[in-house]
Length: 249
Image (cartoon, rainbow, N blue to C red; front, side):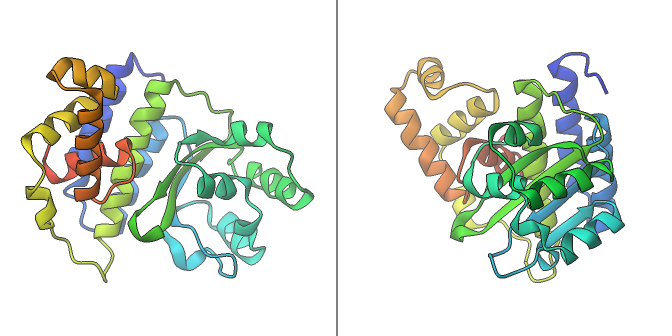
């Protein structure tokens, strides 16, 4: 889909966030994420934790939109431990396009075979959102398609928010997890809410300080406090979580 300006993509994001709040099972969530993936030109997606070196990936997968045959092969071959996308996700906080990783570092023969085989299943290129959660748990949301991916910085930001929100929602649906709002949410101050709101508008700490009449250091402190209270580790996660719990709209 060619978005007619960033506003159209942002509207899609907010529509997704609104609709996903009413998704109470995996199939509903799968359908809604698939619609978003298609709108951005992707054909496959997955949400998964990242296993330890001696583990395989299948117990960590939260939502699987990969071709079944490819996923089975990926598990059997233990490709997770040679996957350059996984390697980058474990060491980076920034969302990235797969081909950027492949072009920036040489691949060993098994990693090259992995990427060649993935392309046979309409997964030539993709977009990955790493998630580093409190407690050291690592996860990712990844989208893939048969063509080369080209996303503007603005569209990357929109898709990153969508990915974080989708991950949060699927974790809430886990049987072992109780859905509740912690008391820390109510402790987010009005000043911190203002900072989060302007973060959602894409403003830097310096710009937020100018708008709100505060020093950049104060804004940074308020941002850090809000991230701690909402158990987030970066701005994108903070905005997604703040929208989810109703702190900002």
